[in-house]
Each structure stands twice: as structure tokens, then as C-alpha cells.
Length: 327
Image (cartoon, rainbow, N blue to C red; front, top):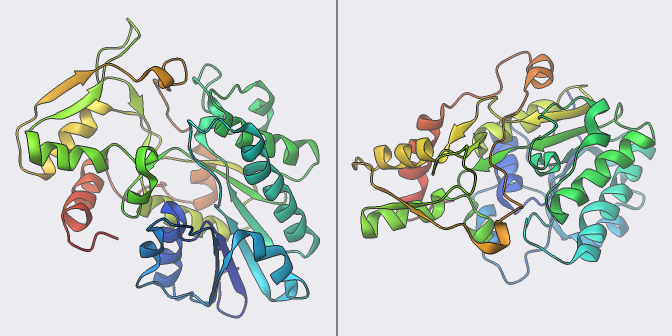
């Protein structure tokens, strides 16, 4: 058991979307000796931490100084902190924040025999032309479509090239959605915008397809509920599994199916309007993602997800989005 209250569990990005849900999952497992690392700034994501139990919270710039001479007290590092905007154009910032910070943290963990689990991303797969296999031998062939994906890809490659992937676990999260994402603005899942849009207009808007082989709304993604993603993350931290793992459902679902699930959760008849795709997404948009979860299932010894798409959307909408306290 790597997760216990005798040692500190560090969660970077712990006030963020997936990070705060991982903290919740840790609490559900009786773990409260948690050091949260984040950059709260002027955002409202601090609200994601209300009701959570943890020992300390630090700004990301303070972490390395704080850990000096405390390394033996750390049991595991769950490194989820990153700039996750797929439209961020400052490449130097992404290199420093997503790539070099991760290198430094991984070295600290490995030097002190600390369990290190980090967030990679399905954005590393680009347009999916080389498939969605998490086989390490496929890494060099991948071509991300944006700088965010490339910054994550560089760290995966660095670990591989330095013979470190068999000592850590990297998680390629697919399209995660669920509570605690409202602070993400444009990068939040479409469901956050679908619900108020549907309540106000009776319709949901989806992007038109720019590919003749794909009908409007039939672009497909591997949508995974954050409660499943958080449970998978904690299970992997608590295991000896190493390498890169896809974190998804293993099933691609269309945007039409997702929208229909939202209508169903609100007991409304489906009415979908298709609108042009924004110019800054054309050429950088993934039309299909589907996680190969073979390695993940072998590591977990179970199917990855407990929620179907429809069950998850219903839970998200009615237990969170429609509630006064949504986090």
C-alpha cells in the first residue's frame, strides 16, 4: 500500500479539475495527509477545495524549497499540475511549466524513491493517424496538433530516452468531464455550456464537421467521467504499475450521443443545431479519439470505468450542475 497517512501524498494541480477530484477520492479512501500544490491566482478554483481534507497548500514555485530535507516524509507525488489550454500559444511558457518543471519533479522523486505518477495527455496522439496505443515503441511516431500536446509529449519522450518509464507511471487522460471544471472557461467540457444553453433556448449547439467522411455531430471522443479518472489515478498510485497508460473508457462516443444524454438528463426532447467550427480550431481538432485500455485493465485487474456515458452525464447534470453548490 503506497497510499497511507504515515507519509505525505503530494498532489500538484490539486485545486484544479482532475486534481481536486483526486483529492476527493483520496479522502474517500481515508487519506488526508495531503500536500496540495497549485497556483490559485485570481481564479475561483479555490472553491474546488472546500470540504476537502488536506494538510498543507503551497504555490507551485515554493514546492522544491519546501521539500528540502523533507523528502523521506513523502510517500507519493501525483503530478497533475500543468497549463492544459490547447490554444495556449506561448511555447516558452509551456516548455517551462509543463516540461521542465516535470523533469525536475521526476528527478526529485526518483532520487528519493518516491512513487511518481504524472499526467500526460491524449493530446499527444494528434489526429490519431498512428492510432491510440500506449505502447512505448509508438511514442516517437506521434505528432501532437498543438503546443500543449507537444509539451506533454516531450516529457514522455524524455522519460523514455533516459530509461525512466519503467520507474514511473504516466497517465494519458482522454476527454475528461465532470464537477470542478467550471473555472476552466473555454477549456471546460462542452457539457458546462450545454446545460444553461439548453435551459435557456431548448437547443444544444455542436460544431459542424469539416470532413466529408464525418457527419455533423458525429465527431467522436473517448469521454471519461472525472470520478472514474480519479479512481483510476489513485488505484495506479497505490500499485507498482509503471509505464504509460491510457485513461479512458475504451469506447468512442459521438457528440450527438453526448448531447442526447444531456437532453435525457433534463427530461427534454433532443434539438441540436450545428454551427461552424472556430477558425483557431480548424486543423487542430481531433475528430476521433478512443483509448486502447488493454494495459490499463491489466494493471487495474478490472474494467476501467464504473459509469456509462449516460449514467455519468445524468450524475453530473443532476447531482452537480443543477445544484447551488456544484463542486
